[in-house]
Amino acid sequence: MNNRREFLIKSVLGTAGLALGTTSLVNGAPAIIKSYNKPNSKINGVQIGCITYSFRSLADQSAEATLKYVTESGISAIELMGGPAESFAGIPESSMNRGRYNELGRKKRNGGKLSSDEEKELGELQKEASAYAATVANWRAKTDFKKFEKFRKMYKDAGVSIYAFKPSTFGRDNTDAEIAYGMKAARALGASHVTLEHPADDARTLKLGKMGEKNKMSVGYHGHTQQTFDFWDTALAQSPRNAMNLDAGHYIAAGFTDIISLIEKQHKRILSMHTKDRQTLANGQNNLPWGEGDTPIVELLSEIQSKKYKFPATIELEYKIPEGSDAVKEVQKCLEYCRRSLA
Image (cartoon, rainbow, N blue to C red; front, top):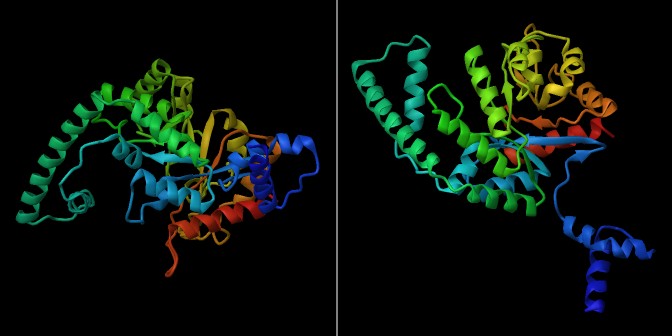
């Protein structure tokens, strides 16, 4: 057994380019073996993560496929969208045409005139959506959270931790039971916080903050180009469980240049920061490959590193994927940009 163990240690260390020069190294080999061939996106003290929304263009959105995308990208910590975890836990599937529902709804919201047939179709789809929402709410009320714990273990065994969870349970139409479910599921997954779009409703952020206190889960509010320096102030004052899911790219696209000052002021209340490269308002606000836009990604990562801030920088792939590439390859490029920036 000792000879076999020593052979395995030598094989692993040899592959990794290490030498067996000391007894202490040999004794530490089990830990090295355990982490061998696993992703590591913590770069010189800065945790680089990724929101699994980045892989939305890929056909298979199962828990197993998503894990494969994450590990192949070299990412070791994630903000997890609700889909992969809830499908793993057995959420009922919907037969409705979600794409058509979103298309018609978007057309109507944007002031487009629907034909009588489209109005009828949208009405039928709305009935289906309401019925499905009730089915899902009932399922969530009876969920076994051990399934989320099993999901967490599967990811942990592959070298991936989950620091944030973003299920569709915190909207105005969700019940208190669904809100509590989302927070309990996040805790079972090992997340420190849930994330959602800022509801622009002080009563709602107060409610979510208080429910976060009750369920021991922090709530990170995400913003788009409505973000300002004081965008989160009311929510942060309402509850110690209310926090920020800052989006650096959207903040720059909104036309602001004081993002470093914002981070200096609020770093204790920032739980994660979406990172993307967008142009400023004056330059067109487009999402571009990293290094081509106006978001000061290098400076932001340097600030996190030098000040030893604890929150992760979350890669969010939103620029157009070039022909011949895919989401995994592009996340790899973003991660490599971070490595060069933090070298």
